[in-house]
Amino acid sequence: MGYVHGGRIVAQALKRHGTTHLFTLCGGHIQAIYDGCLDEQIRVVDVRHEQTAGHAADGYARVTGKPGVCAVTAGPGVTDVVTAVANAQRAGVPMIVIGGAGPKLLTDMGSLQDMDHVSLMRPITKWSVQVPETRRIAEYIDAAFRVAQQGVPGPVFLEMPLDLLMNVHDDADQPATAPFAEPPRPGGDYRSIERAAALLREAQRPCFLVGSQLRWSPMFDAVARAADAYEVPFFLNGMARTALKANHPQLFSRSRKFALAQADVAFVFGTPFDFRVDYGRSPTWANDVKIVQIDLEGAELGRNRRVDLGIHGDSGLVLDQLLRALPSKKAPEWLSAVRAEETKRRAKMEAEIGSNDSPPNPLRVCAELGKRLKPNDIVVGDGGDFVATAAYVLKLEWPQLWMDPGPLGTLGVGPGYAMAAKLARPDANVVLVYGDGSFGLHGLEFEAMVRQNIPVIAVIGNDAGWTQIRRGQVEIYGTERAVATGLEYTRYEKVVEACGGFGAYVEKVEDLGPALDAAFAAGKPACVNVKIAKSDFRKGAISV
Image (cartoon, rainbow, N blue to C red):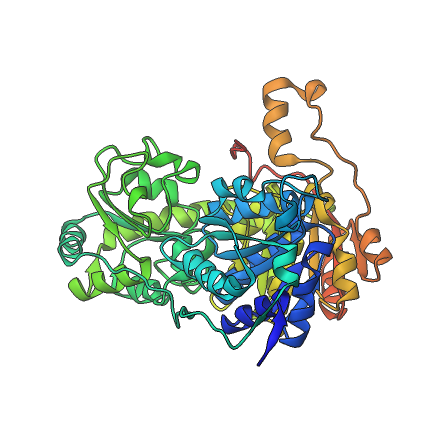
């Protein structure tokens, strides 16, 4: 214990919160933090674009359940990470962004990369603030972790000027604050739980829709217990996707519109009434359906549509409370009707999954990938049409994880998510399911993966276009006016090979399995670039 520079105090405070990795792109304003991390055994992971550093902090949180941390330099370093911060805010993911800044004594004098970072970050964070002095660094980091995790999780921005990081302070002078063992989570009001139980008891056609907020619940397993007790349809989205076993009889994915259009009571846990569920409006939702909405954000209750019962609470805790109030529920005829619709819709997929045509059908590619996934593996989705196809085809269950950007729909999340996932769960295969368009945003992060021995497996569905956009564009304007959405069948795997990784190009279906096997066995960053056939599976999907 003794006098240490501010960067060491940053690292000490992060270590108190269990931080094991700091994601960054180098900059002169933040070098003291790196020096501190070396002393505190926090691995510094460098990337080729600050946006990736932000996405990596986001991805680390999704895998570990704890806030991820990134550090970016002043000016363009901060502006480059804005997209990742906005994405984490919209997805409800806790992360800490440390931004460098010029010395406080030179504020507004035109120092290198000087700008108002705090105001820039304020609209897209839960808290954006400049740390005022070296002795208060640990206090502010404690507060950042607390704010990032309480209520609906989200990003926090801490600006740390250069002189604050270079100045020294006695690290024995610890703040009165300290990390929580677990962030507090609210249960539902007991009167509301009784009303919810009564609605479920009387329902003839109930259904459950469970979203991403479940990931942060101390009772993640409550969904599995509820699905065992309630023989009614369950639909999972976002980070809740793996909460039920893939073959659970109450789990459905292809019949959601059918169920919502006929349900008499719908329980909506931890997901908003946004574009993904047609804002809660008819005809997607039955006109007379009763809605029970549960959310960590009280202000979210009743947004975009009327709800019959709003419960401000944690999804897992409220589900546990509901189970105590109503231990069982059966709706066999309704369940059979939804299952018949699910079976009919899945039957339409089977022909494409089993196709032996070349180039390979995108559903067949995803199915072949699914055969090679192990129980602890992680799949990252970065793209549009091909990724959405994979979301329906791949059957995942906890501790497997599915990670996509969430409702902001950000492209380029893949390398950061994948790097963080592999570092946080080294024994897992981490597979990055890529669109060919999305690869172009941050493809050179494979250099960072190779150099730092982070073996991620990328599978590109290459259809030579931004197909999720192009499909509707052609329908509205015609092929001759479909501009800015066409690409070439580019050999992206060569980029990965040039960086020192493994690459394979596939045009024939018989080459698909061997290429995937080789990538999984490569032991280094790998890319299987698959020329895929056209498919109508996603026809009619919205892109706005």
